[in-house]
Image 1: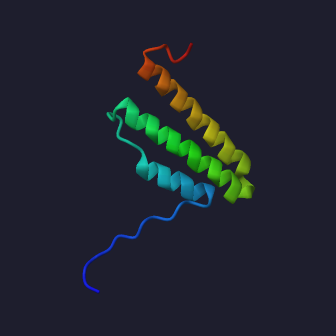
Image 2: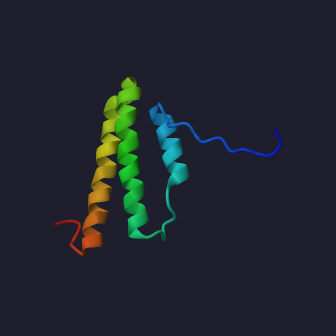
Image 3: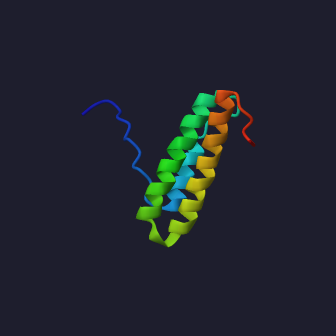
Length: 86
């Protein structure tokens, strides 16, 4: 076969792999709120999956999922034009 193919990255199965993948996927600071919202929602999903696949780090993964969920809710509030700390 000639030509180059790009392998699709495998989903992370450990907490460290999740951190590494999400750091690479992190939007730039100037990204729109909708891009950031999507990123944080994806992060929640990733960390919740990790809590199941990496049982030695399940508590930490659930902490990160909750942390990212809070960020997503704050951005949702900003998008709606509400005060995020209310």
